[in-house]
Image (tube, rainbow, N blue to C red; front, side, top):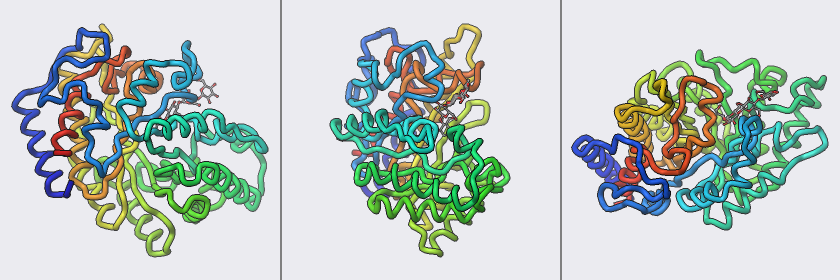
Length: 376
Ligand code: G3I
C-alpha cells in the first residue's frame, strides 16, 4: 500500500471510530472468539489484516517479572497463549529472554535455550523476530554490574557478547534494539549505563558496527520510551542519529517503545516525531506499546476507560501507518494475564488488548479494523 492510501485509510478508520464508537463493555464470551465486530473482520487475526509492508508483533512473555509470579513460564507452558501468539502476530520480541542477565548469566556461560525456542517458534509460524537488547543500563547480570573490569576488558566483553548473540541468530532477526534507553529525560546520556559511563558515548557507534558485522541483514535500531512527544530526548536522538549516519555507522532505525498511561493524554504528536527520523532515511517502529490506566476499586475498567484506551492504541497505530517507513508495530504483550504493568504500577493495569482469558477488548477491535482499512 502506498503512503497516500495508508493515510486515507487511517482517516477513514478514524471517522468510522468516531461514528460507531467502540464496544465499551467486557465481552461476555470466554471462547476467545470475538463478538461480531465492525466492518466484517470479526475473527480475522491481526496478522491477516495488517498491510503487507508492516509487521504486527508482540513481546513473548517470559523471564523478568514472570519469574516472581505463581505461574510457570508463559511461553513454554501456556498452550492457549501460544496459539494466540502464533495466530495473531507475524513478529515476536523476546520480553526478557535475550537480555544480558538472562542470556549471559555468567561471564563464560550463555543461556541460549529460551531464546532459541522463541526463534524456532517464530520460524515455524512465519514470524520475524525483534532482538532485544544489546546495550542497556538495566537487567545486566551481577558478574558484569558488580565486576571490576578495566576499560579494555569491558570493551572486549561487550564486543564478544554482541558477536556471540547476534552471530548465533544471524539471518534470523529482523530488527535488533542495539542501544536501549541511552538518554534520560533531559537528553543527557544515562550515567547508570555501565558501557557509556565507563567507555564514553562513542561505544554506541561501536555496538552498531559490531552488530552489523555479526549480522549484516538485521536492521539495527535505537529504542526508547518517552519519545512519543517532541522534547529534549527526541532532540538528543535526532542529533545522535544524524551524527551516526554522517559517520557511516550502520544505524537503520529509530523506535518508540510507547508505554503509555491514560494519565498523560494520547500521543497526538507521535506521527510528527516519527516523521523526523523517517526524513533522515531511517526506518521507524513502535516496539513496546501498552496503555495502562488507573483501575477502579473493583479492578475492572469502566466502559469509558476502555473506549479511551482504544483511542490511544489507534492514535499510535495511525501515526505508524502515516509514516512511510514505519515497518513494525509491536505490543508489549497481548493479554493482561502476563502484563508487566501491575507489577511496576500497583494501582494501574488492564494495559493490553486482551483480558486474562484472551477475549478481546475494544482496543483489539479498533486495531483490527484500522489495520484492515489500511490494507485495503
Ligand atoms: O533482578 C531483581 C532481583 O534482584 C529482585 O530480587 C527481584 C525482586 O522483585 O526483582 C528483580 O528484578 C526484576 C527484573 O525484571 C529482573 O529480571 C523486576 O522485579 C521485574 O519487574 C523486571 O521485569 C522486566 C522489566 O523489563 C525490567 O526492566 C519486565 O518483565 C519486562 O517486561 C520489562 O520490559 C522493559 C523493556 O525491556 C524495555 N522497555 C521498558 C519495558 C518495561 O519496563
